[in-house]
Every structure is written in C-alpha cells, then in structure tokens.
Amino acid sequence: MKIRKITCAGLRGATPEGGWSNELRPEDCVHTLIAVHTDTGHIGLGSVFTNDRLVQAALDVLQPLTDGECALEPERVSEKLHQHMFWLGRGGSITHAISGIDIALWDLLGQVTGQPVSRLLGGRYLERVQPYASLLMDEPSKMKESLSKVKDQGFRAFKIGWGPFGRKDSKTDEAIVSAARDAVGGDCHLMVDAGGSDAYWARGYKWALQTAEMLKNYDVVWFEEALSPDALEDFVRLREHSPVPISGGEVLTRRQSFLPWLSQRAFDIIQPDVTKVGGLSEERRIAWMAQDFGVEFVPHGWNTAVGLAADLHLASAIPNTRFVEYLTGSPFIDEIVEQPWRLDADGFLAIPDSPGLGLKLNLDAVQKYTGSLEWLNR
Image (cartoon, rainbow, N blue to C red):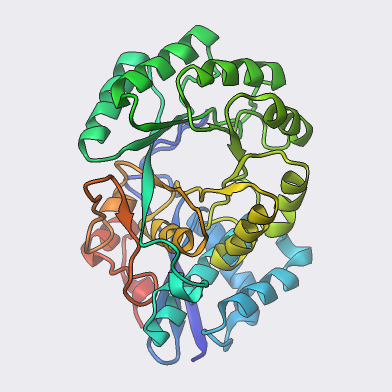
C-alpha cells in the first residue's frame, strides 16, 4: 500500500475561544484535518494544531518525501520526514504537519490489519480512561455556572485555565479557584492552567510558588503552565518547592526537546500534544521516556475529534495514564463524528476498539466546517 497523495482542510466557523491575549474568532483556523490517500483507496485521518495554509505549505515541502512511500510503516516514514527536515523546519509547522501525517498512517495500519491503533502501539492496558473537561476561566459567578453545567453532563474531572488568572491580582485568582471547587464539589478532580505560554506572560517564579501554595488549599491535582515555556531553570525550582504537582510541555515538539525538561526534573506531569509533537510515534517515545524518569504522562488535547481519538488510543497503550483532555463545547470534537462521544456512569470514555482510530466522520458537519469534501475524495 503506497501513499498516493496527502490533502488537508482547515476547520472554521466554530473555532472556540482560546483565552489568548489575541483572542480567536470563530472564523479563524487553528485546527486542520489531514487525509492520507493510498493506491488501494484507503484513507487515513490525522489532525494538526496549525492553520491550514501553513499545513498545506508543509505538505508541499514534504511531498517529494511522501509520494509513493509505504503507508503501513508510520514510525519509519515519520522519522524519515523528521530527519530530512532538519534544515528546513525542525519543530514548528513542519513538525506539526508531520504529526497529522503520522496519526493518519497509524489509522491506515489499523484499518488494514483490522486492529485498533492502541493494540498496534503495544497493547491495551486500559479499556477506558477519565477525560477532564477543559474550560476557560471566568469571573467567579460565571465560572461556577459553567462548571455546574459541565458536571451535569457527567464529567468528574475539570481543568480551568487562562482567562483572567494571573492577569489581575491574587484575590481574583483565589476567588475563581474557590468558586470552581464549590461548583464541582470535593469528590471531583480540579486542575488549574495559568496559560504561561500566552504572549508576553509576565508572571515569574515567586508568583508561581505563591499561587501553588494557594492552590494546595483547594486540593488542585496539578498546576499547569505556571511560567513562560522557556523558563527551564525556574520550572525546576518550582517543581522542587511547589506543594502541588507541576505540569507542562504542550508547546514542545519532538522527543529531543523534552529530554532536558525530563532529565532536569522540571515537571511532575508531562503534556505533549499529539497534533503538534510529531504524532503518535513521537508521543509514544516521549511517554516511555517520561516513565523512565518517573514523570506522569497526560496528553494535551485542545484540538479535534481526531486528536481526541489518538489520545484515547495512546492512553490505553501507556500504563498508568489517568486522564485525557476533552475540550468541552467544541463542534470540532462533538459534531464532526457520526457517533458522538459518550461518558459512562463514572465519567469515563471507552477506548475505541474498532480498526484504526475507530472514527467515522459526519460528512455534513465536516463540509459545514471545512467548506468542502473535495479533500476527502479518493
């Protein structure tokens, strides 16, 4: 089975707010779907956390390396692309695009072998995993209302992030977290994401440590992106002294970028994003490496239904994975699949067990948000 062509389509019209200082509009494109077409007529699906124009440009650059390649060897093909892109774009949009290709190749391998991707990644340690609902922060009364609605949907783990947190004063920060804990109750998991990768993040080590001490009072599971994503030495100090676990890593790409953070014990929890980091092949290596350093692996998943499916399969294949991220209220997760995601009575998601990623697209919704189905034509 050979790669015949690779196409992409950006998702627009319902892009959720990101909490960024330069806020997203519904018509902005930050998530792009990829289709790897083969000479046998099979199509694999991938997802990329990058604007579609950047993805298309990357696909054009990669085309001489992908045309005619074996579509059933995701790790070898993806590593070939990484190796040959050393001088042209190691990291950034090139690596993001390779991520989508890699996910799609694993989907193809699963389709052809009749196996779920999780089994091909090494085996299914889990048959279900707990998703945490990912929501933007808001002023306390609105935060409480938003969380209560999501809890009514069956979620039992919640992450609140970005918004005004760390951008006004410590009283506001604590009021938001206090309202969130009241809303979800003492029997649910609560995580806090400062969003330190936002443009011109101004908070430093002392603020992060003081905030971590406050979060301890609210039984917060982890404190995410408390510092600028380049502040390695400060993260090392923060993790050592913080009374709550410290997490991060969503902006890093490729396994080589994670090694200094793991070897220097900068994180208690590492959070690579499968749609940016290099795909399932690369993220699996990072998860294994994290295990060797005694660091917990939790995939970052602020993306699409395809990204969520990839996260579920990887969570199943990596022992002791407790959570996956679920971006609540996004049509790019909830609407573009034929069978919507369903929480069980305990607030868990089942790991798909059908071949490949186990996804069937809702073509009407896909056409609505991409503008066309031409990119899916065989």
